[in-house]
Length: 135
Image (cartoon, rainbow, N blue to C red; front, top):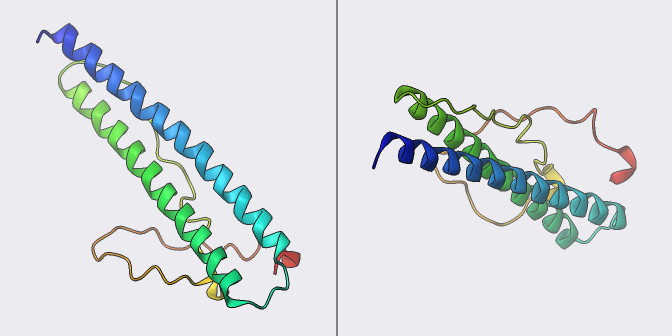
């Protein structure tokens, strides 16, 4: 393989990573909208399964955000490697606020403990952002 071949392959991979991250952002937004709609439809529900479903939505969104974060990191690492061998690729920055959809204490699911060693950002205080009519 020649340097132009490597350059083309790295650029293609970098573009693909960016496209996957953009697609993940759309999926995250769709999941957040579905969760908000479900929350609005079930406001005042006392069935514990409703809260578990909301918690599962939230945990799914967090996992999608984690995946998007990892894609951004992969793109950044690829760009750094390319620069090290003389190829200029623009870095993509990780998305902000990846922990926004954390379940509250009423929305706990039964998906089990998280794996030890996974990196987690501290949970942001989103109490000011919550809709009081959403329950």
